[in-house]
Length: 101
Image 1 (cartoon, rainbow, N blue to C red):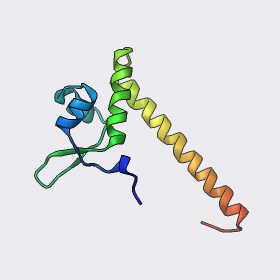
Image 2 (image 1 turned 45 degrees about the vertical axis):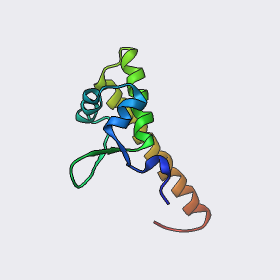
Image 3 (image 1 turned 135 degrees about the vertical axis):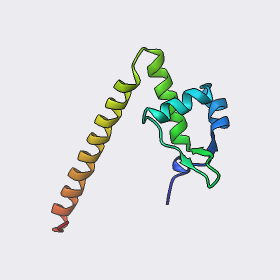
Image 4 (image 1 turned 90 degrees about the vertical axis):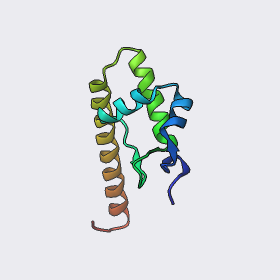
């Protein structure tokens, strides 16, 4: 079951109100590959609560002077770490229960 935080149901206008970011800034962060909204059939961007939290984090880093390129690189590193942790956990579980991939 998908968490409510991951459901893409929030429009860009509401995200603007929640974050204080302009709609242009939000679209720019999408263009830079920092956030990935879904699109409705009519093309409306839809964001999740997780996306809102991510945008707030991005805005805070930008205020500290961090470039979007650096933010994206950090996001890639974190994703890689998460994947390695998942693989290690899966391997440990498989070894414990004598299972193979």
